[in-house]
Image (cartoon, rainbow, N blue to C red; front, side, top):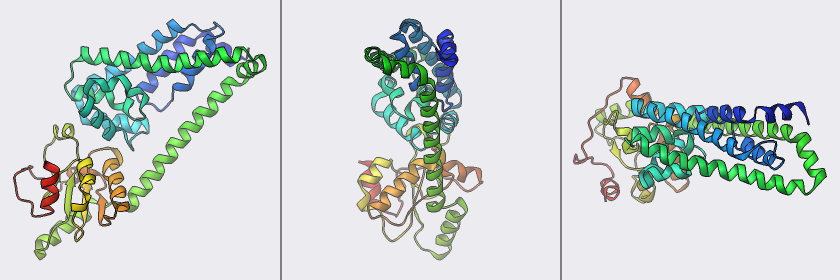
Length: 333
């Protein structure tokens, strides 16, 4: 047996615990190949399923509980931090808040199967005020389903491989190298996708200074200001309910559904609080493909605008906006 594989077999449960713990804390080290490898080795009885599953569940409970209490205390700030660590900033906040809004605690039963959802499920559950006991029950149930799917999938693969001695010998000899290659390919692909996304955002976005200049120009000339849309999820309003001047709150789903009502004679500016402005940038690109060409994401989003010391306003849903009233009315229905 190769030395590396022998080392893994000897310390399998500790390695499993530490590896899964690190991944669940947000570091982009995929554990699925390791879970499959553990299941495959269990077919040879060198690794046993029950202690392996206990190690995985213990790691998930420890990491997820830590992020849950961080979400209780720090709210949206810790959510965005986890997203950046996980390389899933291009999707995780929008996905998780949407899932929690529709399914509540049931989201935890399938969270670990959805890229980007697992990373922030814990802090968003804490931010939403879910009782810890309820969180832990659903989180452990979801972790059990997730771990069992890959460990027992690997066990099935190992049982099949044992019937073909040459193939099983190949796995024993080169399994570690295949695991390393899969890990490197995963990380490289994620980094490349993230860099491509950020480049597209830099090319399409508008800065806070440029938007403020547009608002000042509209005030001086008596012209229509740009149509500014606040895409934040209701959970994101909790730490700061203010909005940019003249902005209206419309969810991404409603905005896309009523895209035909968007004004075509002025700029449409979208902003959110998600890492790298993922929601606003992605929605802007989709709307452009659907024929709404004058739509741009605000770089830095709400936090960038606020941190630059630019003006914010209390949101009044009943205040007349004078811009795309049909869209605002349709989205409110």
